[in-house]
Length: 264
Image 1 (cartoon, rainbow, N blue to C red):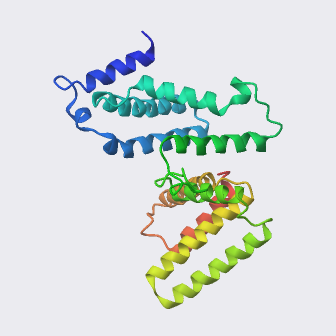
Image 2: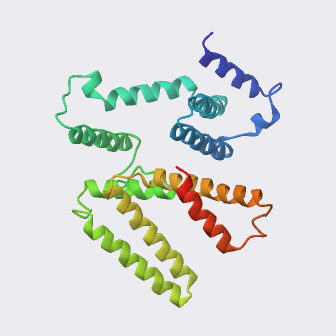
Image 3: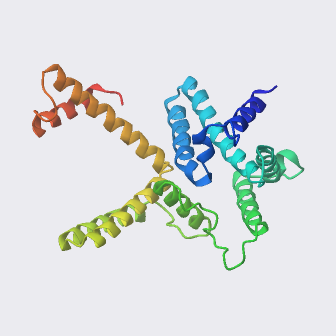
């Protein structure tokens, strides 16, 4: 028995209507979404940290989510894990005619264009109408906001809606920052929220023009903040003090010390 089959059999037992686990039996597609997203992020974290042991384990946890969703579908007579594996196999073959066929792409741009046109054709095969179709179709609505913004901008850029160089992007960042300052002066929270959104969107555009993945960059920034803040906590603890017993000036000085001492 392969490990895949063993995993499928375990999930079948967990979902058995009479002898299965009550919690597993209560789950449906929607209730599993938070767990699926969490496992995907944990895979990303392990990969970015280069922790191979964690990566192997987290990939297993993510695979469990695929098996779990597939088992729920099988219980309802919708599809099976085998159908899922078959569908992705066919998609990979269809989108790589230069590997599994005789097509020759002269450039990466040609290959990417074929990939995108294949995705459009697949959406039409699923019954999308011309009214539904847009250059922005197919971008999931529940993606993390930074990821979604980057995808929207890349899609628009492929159709010519983009600045030709980075200069105007810097100017747009300054413009949006000025608009945010003006909104703050009004005290209108709705307007402030709108301008914050505009500023974040154009910062993602700046990252894209600099060929930086905005989501990855922000995760890196988060880790840097955590490392430096923990440094502050440890240094204060060594002095017999807590955060609440310390002044902002003390913590700020330790922050600067952390910047000099840590490699992040």
